[in-house]
Image (cartoon, rainbow, N blue to C red; front, top):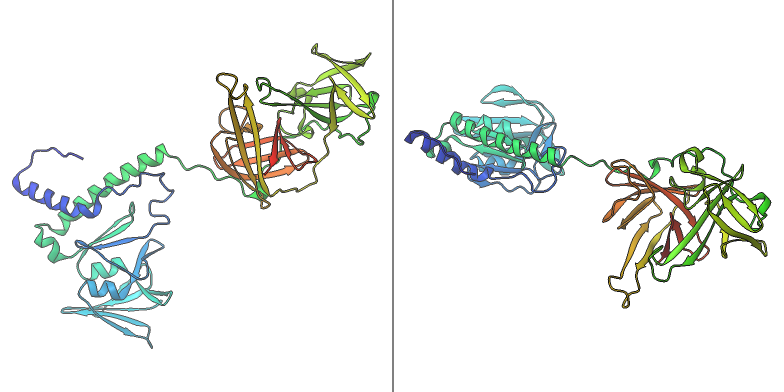
Length: 426
């Protein structure tokens, strides 16, 4: 930072001395994300004149009061240390000054005069902790609190006098410098707002509600005149240009000759709401499944199994309530023929599910997302959060606050289906 201003020699001398003091106050706003409280979770540094004090027990902040181990503080400030264990009494003495404090008492004594403390001395982990500001000011020192490192600055009268400063001028410059740090901190908070934490595993929100019409297929044996439930099958996509290597055929039959083709947009089949999700009506005649939107597919039952366009479809079974999984699951896909087609690419997405209801993953593209821009698919990159499986829906609560719900079911080989992507267990 460059400062330019006109001033007389006296002001320049004071400013240069203040800059020297500022060595302990150089830029201390973290380059990372600002925390909700500037001093939260950080070790408090104590500077006495031009030295940083060392403590075996770290200073602590107790309801706004910094407490430090009394012996190194007293000795650094030239006080003779006294401790009376029977009375739990701490004393510090030097010429013209006697300080007396009692553990657990907010009444202290300075040269025989009672003084009220904001916080009483206490014993923490066998260390006697005393209020730093009270000790400093009792010795006529200038004490300043800098929450942005955090640090306590203590400047003694002899030190300030040697630098050509009074307590008033030194305090004014320190306050000015801390105000600059506050401005930087406030700007950092504004540009890096705190991100909401994902819900705890037990409080992941429920999937969107359906219209209640869905009923799962009751049997593996299919009757074309009584179709109901969700069915799935797959067909290979050899060049990867249609489905990334594997096409998953998903269709859900609903009462009233209604049908939804592909994975439901809000999660499992129980989330289907036909007025929202674009269901169609269908007829079956002469081996053809005809949809109200104009599409037509070959349909047949062979050995009790459902076939649509010669792809065998199996029924989706409802997942048991409260299911959690443990393991690493990987989805792999490709576009173009590797080594043959120019510009061919391949990819994989990794999802780690834990039995405690948490997950981590990378490059996830998971279902319908609520929160932020109205888009489909969770954000790429590295993700973490919590999940819940209910019915045939998996709900992900991401660490960035978004919530995503997708179709979910298990395959007989141990792999899992999330939306229209299959994840193999590693």
